[in-house]
Image (cartoon, rainbow, N blue to C red; front, side, top):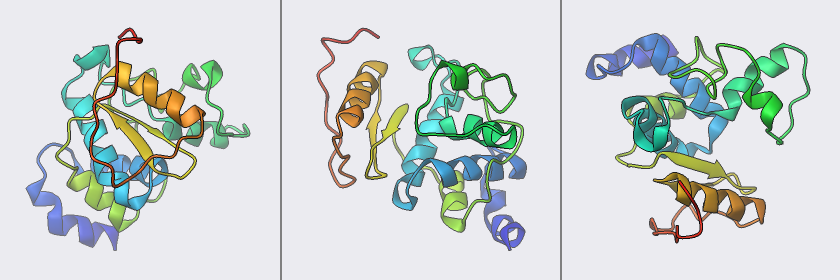
Length: 173
């Protein structure tokens, strides 16, 4: 079914191969709620297409790509994500290796495939998911650091809020 569905849209997409679209869609499947996946997709496209922004270097920095391998390797995966996970040696580690991982990390739904094919028109480069499942999005590392603290403090992201400029004076890029 997925092959048929993708072939219907694939001629419109020049940027990624079919394999890459499925790989990105599989990440989106695990990263966010269905109604945020197009925006998360935009974050990943922005990172892939503008690797010099905030010295990102084309790194997706997706927890789910590392968690996929950790589960496969027999580790217990929790919501805590630290140095061990960020430095775990695998080509699926998108904190260490730029671009998409070698293959899918889950089976994507149509919503995730749509998001991979049609990312939102957005300039965000960062997101952090809150306990509600919704995410805070940011354009700069300074804004992202603020959002991480907001998420750690239990603040819930509002999926219907307009983009707001966050104060950045206390944070270094």
